[in-house]
Image 1 (cartoon, rainbow over the protein chains, first blue to last red):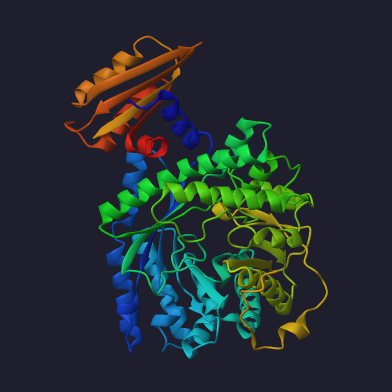
Image 2 (cartoon, rainbow over the protein chains, first blue to last red; image 1 turned 90 degrees about the vertical axis):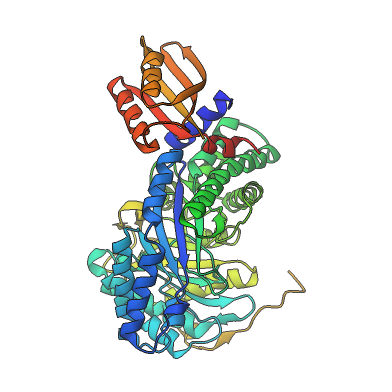
Length: 452
Length: 89
């Protein structure tokens, strides 16, 4: 017989501490849809997605009932669209985005990711056309997510792409100005993009992946925060141990769901993403974990160290619990999606400079940060360049998801709704980096001996 | 295949009887029961065999949750594997 306390602990995690499976994401390869006829390409893409994922939502809902754990999102990620639509013009890519949206609606999924390009070294004509199409595509769809990889540790940083993405973000903000520039919440600029990430907006189905695959993203910042609170005053070894044990339990649930989903759908299981993904709900915040460790407010001195330890302990516990770990796997720090981060930003404790430092020790990067609408494209490119450089030099994934909210300035607030939450507009450095960004070309790949 | 039924709420007469009757109705065999009462707070955990049940897992779950609501109890039916995977290596 199972131990009574164990059973109550699990139920408490789900009921009181917001433990959930954040996403079951099906990756679908679209390489077999390639055609020189745009109409035929669109039809094949629609058919492949709707056929491969037809049982995804129903199966995930069945699993929710059977195991009594909520599965918040059901998603699909596809091969970066620039790779299968290499011959399309920008208009053709917008039409393809509408096809992805139609397929997502037909399936009843929450998001579809992969409207993206890999341009770390240079742009093909297809990639250029896709990037040109992003603002219009994101303004005409609600479920399509876009990601562009502008750098890798091996290739260096494509600064032409960094410059371009600053402009694309500005234009996306303008085209979705009636909805607080929400289009930018579905657009991420990456360095070292993972090929198997189940989380949006950066999910895509990489080139080395099987035809279809199931990837699962767990959650549970509330569970970790409560566990730390329960331990009370203890030293860091004990604290790290507590986080590890909790992360282990959370990940085991993810592993179970991934295994069962894969079995029921007849689709191979890819990876579990160990990331602690927060939501704006009270008690589901990564910032509150850091505060429970003894920081008065997230963003104060000590925050980077606390996050570094949290991130490492989550990985150590999670790795033991799952046979395949991948994606972003770490702690997420999206400002608008985390109640504690929002509070910290509102009271001035959390600044963009501190967030940048924090991204050096955790997964992802500057995520869901609202900035003034009149920020120049060059400044946005400057923010991207800084963040991407951290990823390239440290051989890790970093990303930028900035929302220059049209018509709003520092001190105002923006409401995105749902899982995307709300955020205060954060201040950026007002000095120009225009000359630096407009140089163009590539920043060479870093040397990885002589580490300092 | 086994499931875990948990019933949490204010203590009253006949909770176990009601849950057991529901189980019998749907051909669900009770394997083990633990229950405790702390002050007025009642917590029962029942391990049941659902291999030969005469309904679907989803509808059994629905019926029990409905019964729980009527009696102001929090009743959950979950597959035992979620507990096994979380607490057993």
